Length: 236
Ligand code: FE2
Image (cartoon, rainbow, N blue to C red; front, side):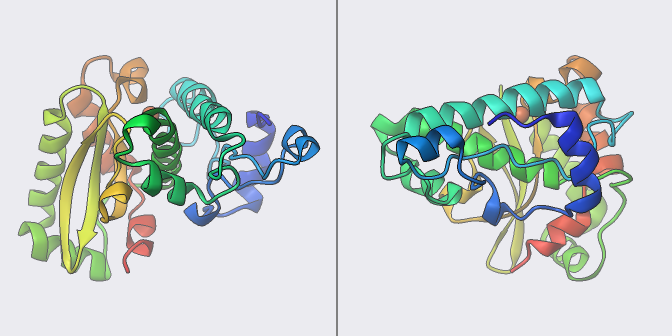
């Protein structure tokens, strides 16, 4: 079920706008799964842009490894882990929420959450992104953090402070926005929070382009890549 990235990206970037997470991981049935009578397999959601779209801030080489190898591996691992279980064919978010905290299902959670997190991460960026949000999202940021500049500083500080692999998120709880960091595969989805956007701070997200300079990567994310329109669309 591996997608041909070059073909998919060239077509999808034109034909398919941002793909909602509601369909993340719930693609068409694989022939092998269909043959065995199993329910549809989780799939690698197409990127909403070409693999070189975020250059020079995120190289095509990084995208090739990050999306084509790391993200794909989480999808493949998840399909192996849930094959023949009640989670096969279920919505991805349901698998994430139900497996969270289950001591004997750590591998399922880790892979399901990483599939979800990465799909959300790709949508959290766009070519020509960055800048400043507008409207209700900006109002909520200013209300929650004091100012947009204070939000940016807090987001970068959280990203730098995350020890080891993980994620930094802008989330909404009630009418307040918060910055949260999660370790490894952990995700706000498992904690009842509404994520608006995220930045992947695993080393595989930035090491080819920034080496150990995570702070520079997060600045580039905020100044040139973050998709505020997507973040605003996640407000409920
Ligand atoms: Fe990643």
